[in-house]
Length: 135
Image (spheres, rainbow, N blue to C red):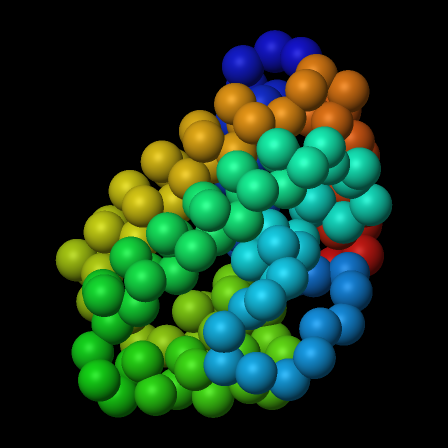
């Protein structure tokens, strides 16, 4: 898979809408709510653990960039089963916040791609295209 395709696919890990329904709570408890292109990917236990750790580290970093009012809106959106992407897009983020979040998410994308095998990366790409067509 060439670098451009990887960047395109991995950039969708957080911004694409989820394909599954998750129970109602303020914190995403499913990897697919935070990383929707992972739907249907069979992860080894060590990969699952690694991606859950990335997830647990990512959300606090994202929340740290939000004001108190934005955080309240963000948590309410997650409680209504909205994806992280939808929850963030509904906020009136400043340019500085957008830049900070972009940096966080670029780091997360790199960590995720390193955790996946080439076959899993191909499946992520297929999921990405399916999500794009569903829009």
